[in-house]
Image (cartoon, rainbow, N blue to C red; front, side, top):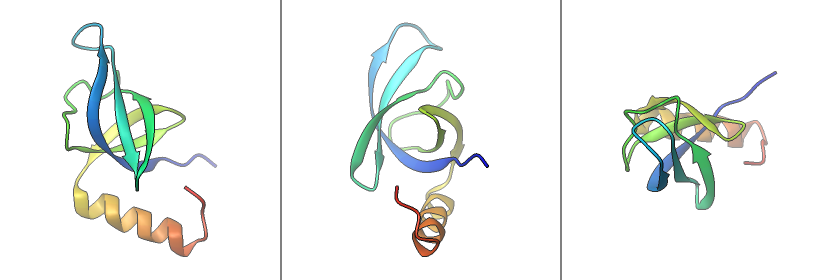
Length: 78
């Protein structure tokens, strides 16, 4: 089964062009570099769904927080 985890885009750290960007994404305080190529419209402050190091979608804050709570209830380590 595949799982996408929500995180908050805090900063774009590499921007080669409009499409290829890397951003720092916070997963409840744990910062990871994430490929933003699949979500070129993403901007700092957006919540992203991230799967194996790539952002695959943008979601709203309520959905992001709800998803994190469900993962915690399931005992998933994020």
